[in-house]
Length: 205
Image 1 (cartoon, one colour):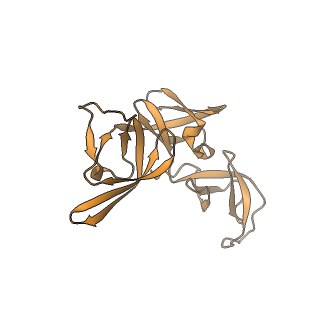
Image 2: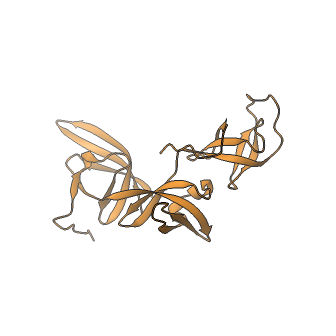
Image 3: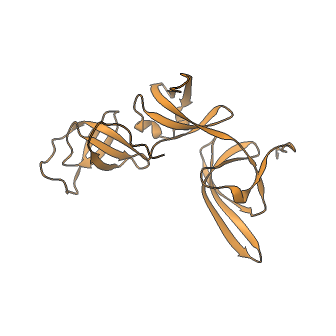
């Protein structure tokens, strides 16, 4: 059964939607992943969207006519600090207010493998409910276990497994040693480069 929106519900044109923006259809929140405006001729156009259901996490594609309207929703991104995991829940704290939140494992969508105690991440909220977690595009970790590096071999295409300081295992070049700091792509889980300095996150939100 189709849900009727109250007359006062804020509506926006689908032409205003862009990647990252959230909206609602029949009480279900979605977030735009990709937006494409397609001209059909004689003044008509279609809006093709790749959207993510923020409840089920399912990604689908949907096409609207350019005059269509959807219900706007207000989402808030909050920067929270990761504390710990308890069974299938992950706990975060607002470092300003000390308010704590728990997120179920399905909400994490596999991103929990990149978490480190004390690390800050962005979490999208809607109506005070956490919907999804946004990590920096890359993070820096310390190598705590791997086979000895090969001195002078900085251009080899060969790789070996390495365990990082949060337990994550990635493939690294042969020249990487225990104690090295390496940057890891949080979208693919792949090694990017060896870095110097203190192993803190390179935040590129």
